[in-house]
Structures are given as structure tokens and as C-alpha cells.
Length: 325
Image (tube, rainbow, N blue to C red; front, side, top):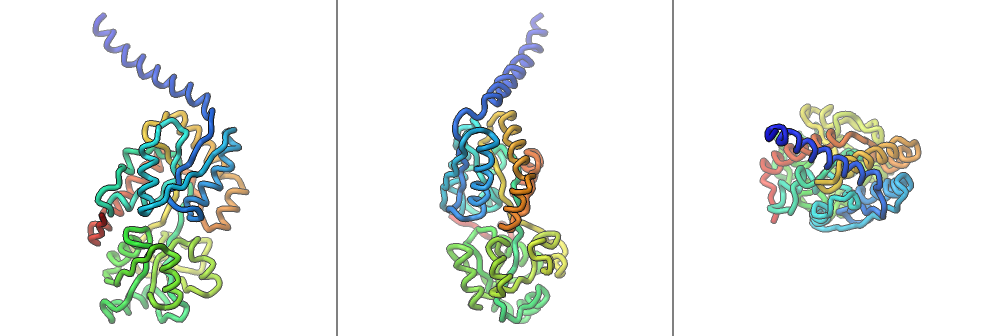
């Protein structure tokens, strides 16, 4: 009898815990929800958080408020989200920068991207594009490689700052292409873009939403996209892989997460609601106008993707020697 008690008791505890979680989900949400965005208003994660938040509020019957906690390349807001109560009332719109890159670049970020969050779904991918001035003699990746090898140390690339996605994407490119360009970091991608347009800096990688208007107007020339396939937003621009760097493929991404420990039934309800929104024509059309590609994968798929991304950028940062206080 003693042995039987030891077998049955844990089962009852697990079932009781599941029942409590299911009950919490059935009442969820009973008050407003906030989505922490670790960037200023107007950036990609903020735009998507507001787009989803408005419709998620209607879907769940509660208001959804976006709270911007910017600073340190997204680290401050990400750390705050990781420390929030795991009750489903604080969500987090994370991205490749603070989740996959910053942990390997900064000495201490105050969170573990894998252990401290419960992924809900990867909302959208954001392809990076290498751009240059329209008057530049760099008409292709091949021309860039040739110039970089002929004029060692002469070419410069801009970025939105040390440790940003634009910075590490170029570091990955240089590692795969066997090149060395001089890095010119700025306080943000818009500032870097001004100097690229003026020809003061040779090239830079930036997300399609940030460069699309300037490429279409002729103020910038697009050399290649970072994704494995051509972007529907720039169908005439080849991929880096097509341009001769065969093992190069990477995109930025923006996803919705909750603090680790949030009940699984709540995660599942949020996932169902968000993916339903992502499949509506109105949402997809709106995201297309903003140059975002919707994803909507499962929580487990998103979790595995984050682990893969953390590993990739850790290697890139270590090889490049990128480390910040």
C-alpha cells in the first residue's frame, strides 16, 4: 500500500496542476493585457505589437495595451518582460536583436532568452538588404568582393550600432565571404542610411521596411537580400547565396512571447488567437504594405528556432570578437 501511494500521489498532483491551469485559461483574460515592446514607438516590433494588439483585444474581449520600454538595444525591455508575473497578462514582442544577438554581445543582459520565456508564435520575418548609394560603382556582391580584396581596409560599412542585427548580419557576411570591411556604427539605422545615401559609407545591411521606399525611389541601390529566397517586396534583387556566398541565409524576426512559467492552456489560447489574426486577409494585406512576412508557427517550433538563432549569433559574435559592457 505504501508503494501504491507513492505511485498515485504524483499523478494526482500533476492532474491537479493541469486542472488549475485549465481553469485559469477558461477565465482568461479577465482584465487588460499589456505587451512590452523593448523599442521606441514606430519601430518594427512596436508596429506589429499595435497591429496585433488591437485585433487581439477584440478576439479575447479585453483591451490590450502596448508599453514601450526602450533602451540598450532592447535589453532593458526584454529584462523587464522576463521578470514579469507569468500570469498571461504581460506579453512581450521580442525580436532577433535582444533575444538572439544581445546575449552573446553584452556581458550581462539580465535574462536567458531560452529559459526565461514561453514562446507563443513567431509573428513575422524581416529580410535584411545590403544597400549602397545609387552612384556607387558597387553594382553587385561580386563587385563588392572584388573591391574589398583589391583595396584591403578601404571599404566601410554602416550599422544601426554595435551589436545590432545590421551589424552582426554584416559580420556574418564578411566571415562567409572572407572579407574585412571597416565598421562605422551609428546610433540607429536611419542615421547610418543618411551617410550611405550620401556615399560617405559604402554599404550597409538594413531591414526591408527601413529601405524599401528609398530603393524604389532610387535613393538607394539594393545589392542582395539576406534570405534564402528572393523577397516578394524586391523580386528583382538576388539573394546573397545567388551572388556566390552559398552558405549565407539569415533574416530578422519578431515574435510574441510570455514569461516562463505561464500556464500552457493560456499559451495555447494566445497562440490560437494570434494565428487566427495572422491568417486574416486584412492583417496579411497590412503586413505586406509594411514589408513584413507573416509566420505564425507553433510554440514548440518557435522555441526551437530561438535556440538555433542564439547558437548561430553566438558563433558570429565570438568569431568577430564583438563584446560590449
